[in-house]
Image 1 (cartoon, rainbow, N blue to C red):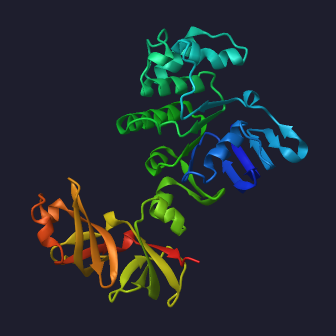
Image 2: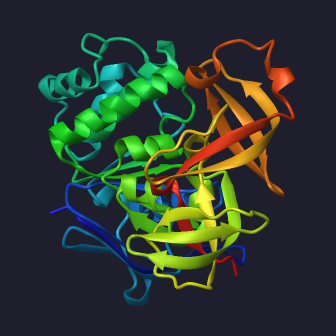
Image 3: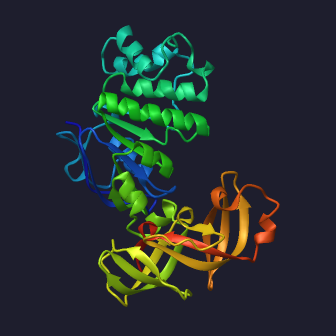
Length: 370
């Protein structure tokens, strides 16, 4: 068993609250991602699990062992927690060979550095034959693979990742993201992963906890977080770039009729939020969900509204644009399928009448901002 439980964890630094009475339960064998902006408390939470920080209050258990309980004066040091950790900065010994770096956790556990174990770990991360090289002579991506092999070589019950891909270029990040998921599925370790990158979280996680101000704003599966954010903060963080104050006009089965402020025409939205006619709410829509067309094209469960084109930016596979719907500016997209390719006609379109198609399934209702 390698489930992890945090109960009432709090941590302050110089009077500033980094974690605020945090409760989390991470299941055995789960890949769990802590997602949020800088300063939200996600790294401090990870460091408390690792034993690199001692919380001021609360209890942490790993498996059946209590590793932190300040009230009972329990604090198990990191080297006694049976964890592997991969840092953002690799943290390799530059004077050691790859073999020496990867085998180091076995030595620290009092086990003999058997070549077979080290070679198996290197093979798992795609570095077969690299054992004799020095870490300082490797590329950034190769060094991060060595750090991963070092974390898994002793087969710890828990793996911790502190933004391990943030120093790599985009192509390497995508490749190593795939490798991390593959290794997790092969080995079945429990993993806790910290990132500010929503794409990483969605690609890797079984569950995601979005954090702000030392608390969890929302916890759920990647598709639940991405498609059904529970708060304005989560919606903005996962890419909803249109958030409009609105009023619910009526409810009709599985849809709501919603009128954004400043609009003359209502929207049809999914009824995920329990809300009644007459109540205030916020409407969240990604720009990628609003398709700007040269002529209105009716479709089931799609609201089409007239708009005026304000700005166009050519992005190669699409146009990002700003449109005015009545008195409201909205971000949207124009597809090459509808508008063709090229930049000469972009300026001539500014100020023209266009039509925005907004599917009901892509509209999220949020509680009115307090």
